[in-house]
Image (cartoon, rainbow, N blue to C red; front, side):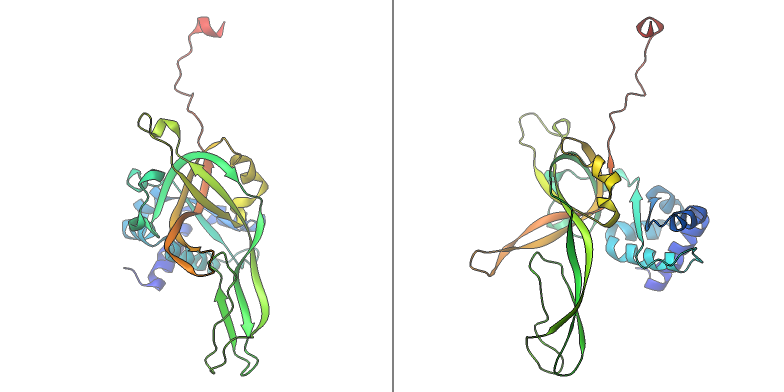
Length: 262
C-alpha cells in the first residue's frame, strides 16, 4: 500500500499530465468537481488504480489534497474527483452485493424507481466542552444525530454545539434492469445516496424515476435502529455514489438503408 504522501504526489502528477487545463478551467467557473477516466489512471499508474478500487474513500481524499497543491485561480475548500470507465471486473449486479464488497469501488446499472427530495444532511458537528473548553468533532455517519459521549477531561454529556457542516443529499432507489435478469427472477433494489454536486439541477434530470443509469460508488453499511431505541445486529447496505450517468440505448450501430430513409 502506498504511503499517503506518495498517493497525493502520484495523483498530482496524473492530473498535471492529463487534466491540468481542465482543472484550472473548472475552478475558474466555480465548479468543485471533475470527472477523470479510470482507464487513463491505469495506464499512468496501475498500482494506484488498484488502490482506488480497494480503498476509494482514502484515495479520493488524497486526490482532493492533490488538487489543492495546484496554483488555482480560486480558493477551493472542498473538491471532488469523480471516476468513470471502470473495468468490467468492478461491475456488479445489485442482487450479488454482499458484505465482502463493503468499501470497494464498484459500478452497476439499474433503473431509478424512487427518489427523495434534496435535503441538507449534517456531515460533521463541532462541540465545546463547558468544563475544559476542548473542541470535539463528531462525524455524523448514521441517520440519528450524535453528540460526543464524553470528553478527555472526564465530563460526560451536556456539550455545547458550535457548528454543523451541512451538505445537500438525496436518496434514490435503484432496481435491476429486466435485461440483466434470468427469466422470472424478481429484480432486487438498493438504496443509493447522492451528495454535493451529484444533486445539482443537471443531475436531477438524469435521475428521474424510470431512467436507466450507471452508478460508480462503494457499498457502505447503515445500522438499523430498532423500535426499542437500541441498534439491531443487522445492517442495511447502501451505495455511496461517486458518479452517476444516464445509460443511453445505443442506436448508433443500426444500419438504415436508403429506402428506409426515403
